[in-house]
Image (cartoon, rainbow, N blue to C red; front, top):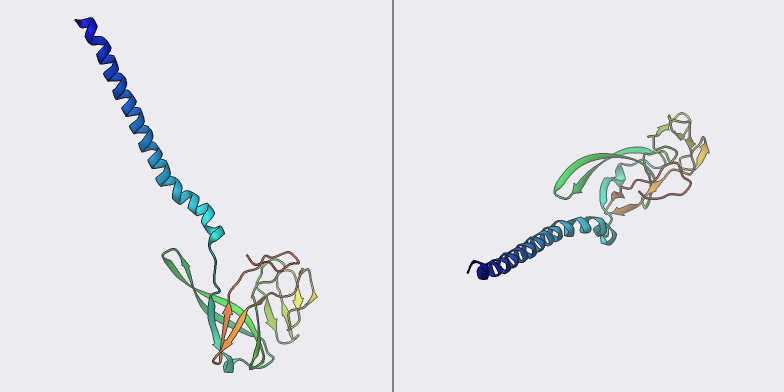
Length: 177
């Protein structure tokens, strides 16, 4: 009798093992899918995400002098997921008329240093490597590979708004980073 029961126990044990193997495989696959979907989404998601322009209120147009560069401090809010951070941005603005204002990024296109306006010479000057720019942003001297980078502007109801951007330094093309 002991011989007749042995094959039945082996079949039962084999069925149990097969069930456990399937159960562990399914649970492992399920865990892999649960972890894998956000991981794949984080790699693929940015390719399909569109960014709309974020306009930052820079100044009242009436407060800007005509023809003279002004360093504006602009309050911006960065949002990353659920974290919001306030940041002060600096831009250079030159008002040409009530309908036209040029706003420059504060970073030198050579290596990304901050340049300044020199009222004695009437030029923008970068202290890092001696690049000199005219008030319209053209390069007058130094190693700068391109003119000063301009930022998109919008004038509505007497208010100047700026779209903040960074550009790649050290190259002759103006490429948004």
